[in-house]
Length: 284
Ligand SMILES: [Zn+2]
Image (cartoon, rainbow, N blue to C red; front, side):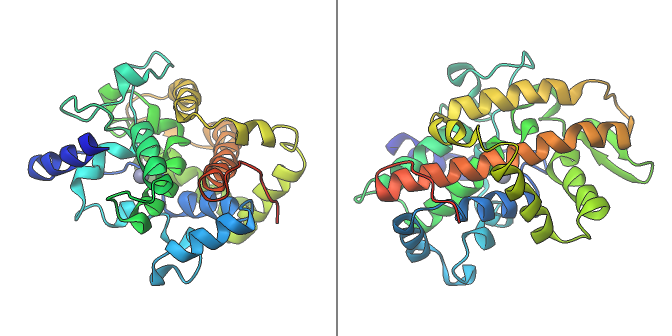
């Protein structure tokens, strides 16, 4: 932890270079945290509410994009949003968890470990409100497959594509925002809460048998490994200037929805373990 603190200071000075988009968009993070909220034990929920800033109005989901909105002020945190790989569909902590100048532990998996440890340690030097907001955000990020994409194209940021022949974007943003926004538009009346309800319904039906296994996977390296594998599929058939539309959208959407659900279930399990000593999920 002391090492990370030191690196933070060094990185403020270095103002690490980072690609523009490095997160699920606002909607993706909101959904992950809203789903997590429904699985918190009463003890964990009380502890979370006690740490939230006033701006959250008692809702964790309201502040889950905080590390993105604050990025100009906290530039040292830029490498903590992702863990890119050489593109071999694998994540290796020793090989891939480093900052742009090779600083150890400066990746999304290192950040999840770090802020989990911070919240577990009553003598932590960290601001615990910020630790909670960082942890909640990064558990979301690590589930976005392109956050464990290829280093050579900054997780798809430099692969320029067109979305439905109209919007110029890039492959990273397709996974951050476009799939979610198109799904909201096509199926959910442009209403985020309706999309959240649909994902929750899947959790009680299609994924019910997998939910406990997701929660029991408390090892964030595994989340990055899953994303690295999924990112390999996400690159298939995509080239510079590709136009992506229905075929790509319909293959990506189930993956996006499942990763949001997994992120939510696992964030709840992590917070339950931190604040109530077990990973028990309490569905509401
Ligand atoms: Zn992020």
